[in-house]
Image 1: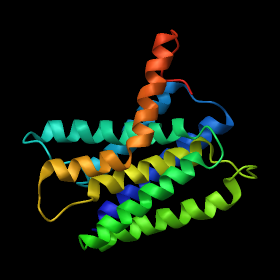
Image 2: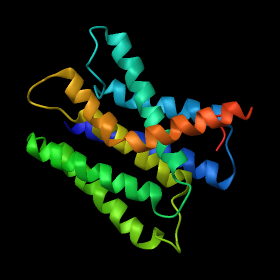
Image 3: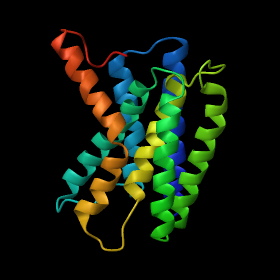
Image 4: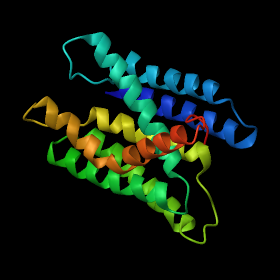
Length: 194
């Protein structure tokens, strides 16, 4: 639906502006987090949310957490040339294939657009990189991947399949984020700072 696509683009643009602000002037981690939840809530307001649980409040809470976690996971992964863009491209390929197999052509089109953006970026981001993603690009990429994962559906309607496939596809950034948070907490550092 068009309003859902618009909400994805508006939320992704807000994420990108937050990242740009952080890249240029520096932004408090708490302000950044509030902005990310605000961008994620734009999705929820137009009906782009998880429908796994019987309670709507829980669905909305998990949706907000999912979007913010995936967005930040892609941002944390952006620590070497080609890594975040490469992971985004691979995830986009899987989302595109699954969307086409399940006749979700609009989700497939969004995945194809994201794949094209990642591949075009990677041409200039492989070592030695001439351009860098920064927070502006990583937050945008993570937000669109999270939203695309929410929109992905399977005809069998088995909720665990619908939910676990995106988790597995985005497993690398999720694992990297969990490892980074645990490592920072063990060293007594703030896990919110990058």
